[in-house]
Image (tube, rainbow, N blue to C red; front, side, top):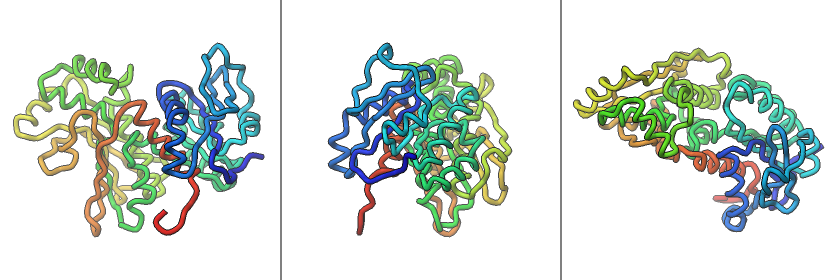
Length: 339
């Protein structure tokens, strides 16, 4: 059985090789010396898997052309052959991939292999099962890539506001929605705004989840689970979409010096409810200050004061960097003092 073990070059198995997976692999392959120097660990890409093929990389890469890959082995065999310490998931966050992602993660966690994931779907449906597998295997699961790409929102929810009495969340965690609303405020049509977002690499080919509020709701469901122990599958969601009728409201807000934002919110005083509403924000509100595809989360801590994290790249690279940060978190040697 595989289990985490000491070593400065922990083996990583990557599941999924789309834009996010490729960006993650490129970082491991090209930044290894810097990671070892700065963090005391050099994660090594030991295998890449997709639905119909896999490739083992005994020397840590580079990844050969797909034509040179072999049929996939069972994940259990791949983890054993590589001595993997981490399974990194860059699978699509789709209903079709949900069961595969869940089965992979449960298997790895139960065998003592840490899981780093940017895939959201199985986190919503299998949260408790994943947590139990991690407890059974003595392993860790990190989800930064699923909650805001390069924005360290999950880190704050998991540990950064611990003990500060956080009672609420207000967030604009979807960069596409923020960008499109700003373009609508400038007079663009919805089609033109979405087209510009695609051209800049901000929006997915299908931006439905971004504009419907579904993606923002998902991210806040996951943050609330980290903060307050909510079971994501039990959360009730209400959303208000950015659509062709939104333009006049965005323009009217801009005339008043305000900005229309798709704000996702949750409160400890209203358990298991997440809402995404189009809200006219005013100067001084951290969500008003966002520009372009920036994101932000405001943690409402009545005694400590609101704590805001904002910025973070909305792109495959941003998600890949979040997964790299999580990989270092679960593999870097624990130091002493300020380390």
